[in-house]
Image (tube, rainbow, N blue to C red):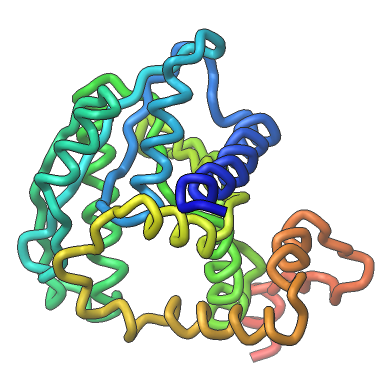
Length: 258
């Protein structure tokens, strides 16, 4: 099989999962004006390509813009010139914003959380300024499972991310159309397509809990090659009758007993 055939085969599988997610979770609706968070990584590039192509289909009719948020105080850089050329080739407008944060103002939060939160706020602002009703993020199936494992391990909560979520404080809906796509396939497509790597990676990426969960997921897949799909399925297959009941804390009773 030639390189071009490899690319077409992988792209077809990813597109099928992209389309399946769109239908199953009602991610795209007629009249949507979507802002794609374009970090410059493989997932966001793949997402923008798929949504840009989807915008040329008549129903449902959507429009797409891309936004790249630079963090001035984090030595993490994407190839901006490549992003501009990539967007131009797809016929998509690229918006660029610059933000920063001071990690010393909140010692309870990790630099990763603060960076992510400030990037997200910048996207909300750009979405509202450009009349976008949805923000598309490039989280893939691995990201969902890793988040679930982190929340179980460190928060004692069975939760992950939602493929579609209406924000409470902003008139924007978050969608994650790559939620059914495997990270390995996206990485393979990016490599075969010649997508450039980040010019400078985040210095905190290997220190986060997410990195540990990524390693855990890899270990689970060695134990069972179907582990990722079973973990994904478990998120919508909660058998509450086989779990301990939730115990509500009675603050008044506790106070009287003391």
